[in-house]
Amino acid sequence: DEEQRFGVEHKERLKGLRATVEVLTMTATPIPRTLHMALLGLRDISSLATPPLDRRAIHTEVCHYDDRLIRQAILRELARDGQTFFVHNRVFNIESVADRVQRLVPEAKVAFAHGQMSAQQIESAMLRFVRGQVNVLVCTTIIESGLDIPTANTMIIQDADRLGLAELHQLRGRVGRYKHRAYCYLLLPERRPVSPTAARRLKAIEEFSDLGAGFQIAMRDLEIRGAGNILGAEQSGHIAAVGYELYCRLLEEAVGQLKGTPPPARREVHVELGIEAYLPKSYIPSERQRMEIYRRLAACAAASELKQLADALADAPAPPPPMVETLLDLAEIRLRAGAMGVESIIRVEPDLVFTVRDFHAVEGLFKDAPGTVRLPDARTAHWRMPPAYRQMPTLVNVLLNRLRRAGKDS
Image 1 (cartoon, helix red, strand yellow):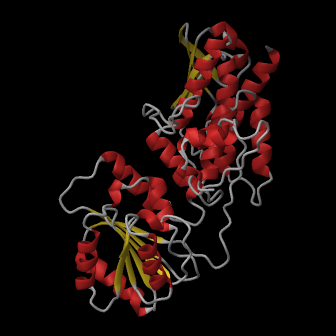
Image 2 (image 1 turned 180 degrees about the vertical axis):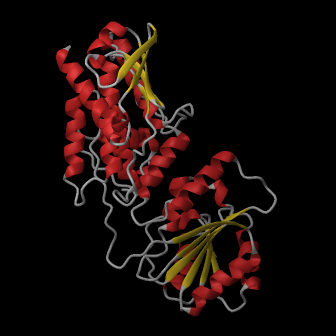
């Protein structure tokens, strides 16, 4: 459990205890290396996204340090007989921070706890907090996991830019454990600048505040920190800012070249017809599912794979709207046109302009085509359809049918 707290050496040592050991890893935020191995298919992965009954999303806000905001947040919690965590991850001045909070909110009872205190002192502070004798606990990240206090529903994290995504998500998970609305304030320093990487982390934790957002946060952490070394001990490491999907494709190509079996080069076809084609949020609300469908669409290398995806979408509770059907049609157009050696299809009224590698390979496409076909040079064709065919979606249907017929003839 809490896999993100273990290093590669620790986990390998546990595996070495038995020759046939089976490992089940549990975490709310997988470390980049583990998540990457799961996405590559090297490990099985299950995602538990259903929250407990009556659990509500935590309101998360990133803001600069403000005494008035801190006082208002604590007073609001006191008004509903609740409690507040104030996270300050610096032991040397945590007592002075606790004193400052006490001066800001004299109505509250404030205590502090950190990892350098004795076990008895920590236990005493925590018991007072659990019993409700203390309203505000100023503490370090020692509360990151293992606490379930239903009355604690406000979290204030000072210098949040110094903490990682997984830490922030785990800390935020200490509040909102019951049916009450919980609040999490991520405070930034007044004078010290925030690094671009820290800004991306804070934007991610603020954006992904819905229930079950741990997987999305882990994916963003993977983008920010990188996947690390699959065969080595590094659990993070940059993907050279190329994006995760492109990184996986480059990795696949590199492995294929080392094996002497490089993957076949994909022919990307630029299609620009001036028609809406996308997955609307009203049809698929989940951003993660939409991105997964886009990824599968881009990875389709055959018409049969495209049909499987279309059949899967057809099984959805609601029928696909027109822009989704157009998206699938355009994907098939790219696929079939690329197989024939077409480089681009661009709508320039009143013509469709084709750029091809070899005109002889696409002669069947224009044979007996409705309208007129003009050839300005050996690699360009201008197809002017009759006016009735130029309207959408008729133009897309005619083009797709011509490509299908030409593919069968060839």
